[in-house]
Image (cartoon, rainbow, N blue to C red; front, side, top):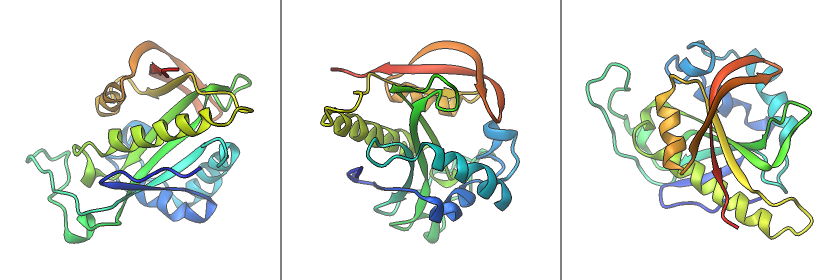
Length: 209
């Protein structure tokens, strides 16, 4: 499934050959703060955990997988003096066609016996230098809208009825992206996953038919 580029971004469905991109975005403690408490991923983490999980739901026809996001133009810097934010962008960071992060699409509750193919989970992870520029919400909307539209053309495939996302309750930046996507709060609950059980908030948007 091809995702059309936006004015600022282009997309590429990842495979195991793109493990270096998964590794790259995980090398910042701030990026990983609400993923695992701020621990950078090791190459072993990527090879033995991240890639096998991605391969488990990877399905180009249905739009499932992780989409690498690249800039199609130089991005402006954003720095407010807050130590949690990165320093102003270098030319390398802001250059067109630079790798920014990724968007995940898979059935909600995929790693359980109740995978919901009509309810797609969206996820995202982006490098710190593009935080605060609307990149995550732009990328997630572009990918989700394209997957929903293309799925609707496949009469033999279950149409998408909802888009969902989860985050730790303290992850206000990610929750902000969910709200920008038009998602609304559903509940706080314990999300079960082979990697562990997590206290999360669930947001969801119903897809117009």
